[in-house]
Length: 319
Image (cartoon, rainbow, N blue to C red; front, side):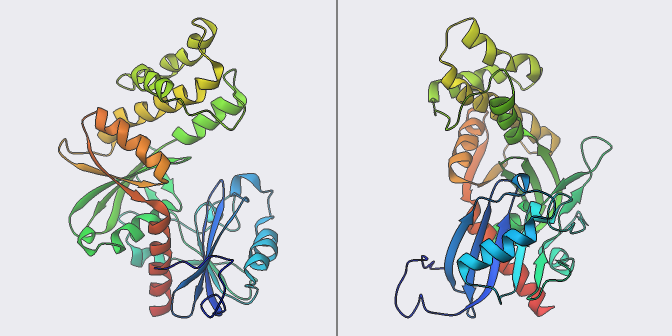
């Protein structure tokens, strides 16, 4: 689908908007403005992730900043992601696995006292690797969109690795999410770099050699807390440049995740892992998984998110 920039001129750019679709996660918000035919007129990003907002701030930011920039004060909206969590706008109840797009569309939560209406996609809940359940929000929409982008994906058994702040490994069977396993990889990376003795000022330097050191240090993923201390030892004891520490941590954390989580989710030895998300991050995961002997394919998360939101909105309208 063609995307027209906010600076486009002429008849296309003058088309009236009809709907807002938004992926509102913990670190940022991405919003698409669609016309009545479903064509994307604009894509805008906002630095107002759920983790950065105070309680009750979401409606003010959305109705003021977001609608204002897009001149969309009278348009309905459909949002997915952490905005539907207990630290978001409202809590959109979870649907339980196995969960397909139809179940998610039937459980869309409408935000009270919003006119025009705002709907939020529910999260998904799965049995965890401990007695506590596992949960996700936002990744389900990308998974459903990924399936919608190629009908062949709606048949059979698939495994999606979705890296991010909270990485998700999702098992899909015939287009439905049947189980998933989460990992705190991205959040641990941020905590170590911002709030520990290893803290490094952003923006972080991308050092491939240090990344490779981290991958090697992770080993089989066991004893991770002890292995991570090498991030301190290589600087304090071996004179490594502290600016390379984030790359080392990235390699170690990603490699530990990739070495352990496939077993938790029941990956088959010859299975292809579909790595879905930000292109820069999916490339790193595919690299590490390849070193561990896994076959991979990478896919763009933005395209999948848009496809998933359009699918869920279509099911909402049809229902």
